Image 1 (cartoon, rainbow, N blue to C red):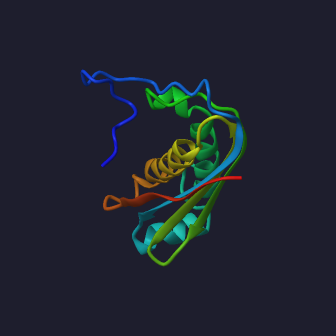
Image 2: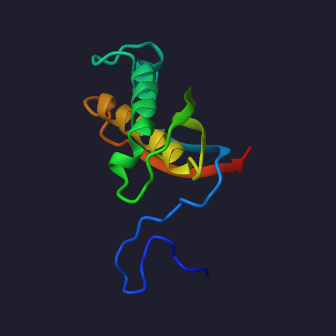
Length: 148
């Protein structure tokens, strides 16, 4: 296993110095899911949740979270996103969320993509918690990270 980049020799935290890195177009894709009961899925599909459109709110929450990632994750560099997309898909067991983040910068956008998915799923949880007490958020993962 390689050396952790966010810790110093004494174990204290360290924000990685990216001064000398060159700017590149970078892209990351992340995904995750939330399991809902069948009644909740139907309420989501028909926009019958009292708080409003669950899928629209989840997309907005994901986008907003990606834009604030460095405010949430302590050692994450603030980056200028050039694109953030959050897609939601209703399935037989719940909702899948996929986020694609793109930037031109010195460091990757995987944390922004993962944060977008996490926030979107938390938004769905919040909006559905009054009608579904057994929701499970799972499988939040980085699917792809590339330099363009």
